[in-house]
Image (cartoon, rainbow, N blue to C red; front, top):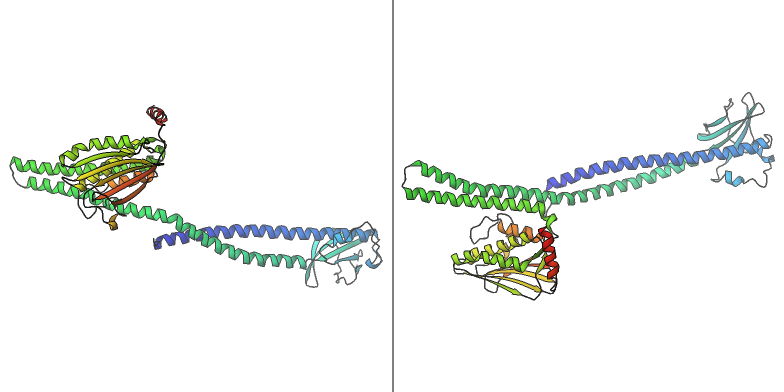
Length: 427
């Protein structure tokens, strides 16, 4: 089904919002990670500087070429990144002397003990100064490699971040479409249902209003008033049936999850329902029969009142379409692990093009047979709630066939368990 444009717009807004949150979260994580990495690399450089100063101080501030490193000193540990570390000796008046070959020129200045940074040869250096014989020993190491690592990491993060944001947007949009589609369908069905319900309720109300207006318009005899009242009563009864069906659907939708653990005997319930409709069948000169096939008890996991309502809807529907002098067959069968309820009639049947629509609320087939248009909607709700399957076909006797199947809950020989379950339910 094609998605409506408002749904796409709402999904796009959700996707933009999710992408903005993702972008902010990613930027914060990247900022913290980059700061931590840069701080770690700078701290490692400061450690190497401290080690270099300790060696220079131990050797009396002599040029590095004459320094002999003890055999147990792991100098490679201090230059783990192969970054050259330079050492200077600074006099009390701030005049520097390089102790390391190829050291950049250090500006003449007085130093404070501790760590700092300095711009040398257009490159930022991490420097560390220690007091030494009235002056200072200064060690420095370029942070250019730290900057390159940081820049490479930022570039990688930008590329990965852009791809990640695109994926977040697409995923959020798709999820938004899928999440909003059921809501949109529900809203659309609610609008359609409201419009149909308003129309169905308006019709009998308009008839009642018209009948009353005509009856009060001029004097009439008793028979005329009686006929008017009978028509008003019929429309009132129709209103009552519509309201009752709507209330039943609303209550059933709210309670279906709480009733699913109940056990129901489809044979006993359907037989009792068929007996109730015998009066209707006799009035319409219908032949209504009940047949049971299979030896197993037709026990299913469903609410008993729901099975009773389902059987009543199907039998009532079959009686209406069979018409006076017609024939209706009600069949309950158990085969393997399946329970089947089948209701057949010899009426005009159901056009294959209408079989997907007959369960819609207020839908009526092209063959008028009365009713509110809610009966089969109630049947569909019960079928779905009890995890049953429905098949609509042509009956062997010529009309429509409704075949409902459930999974068998209890096999033959489990009647004792069924009676126990029934006693527990009554309590």
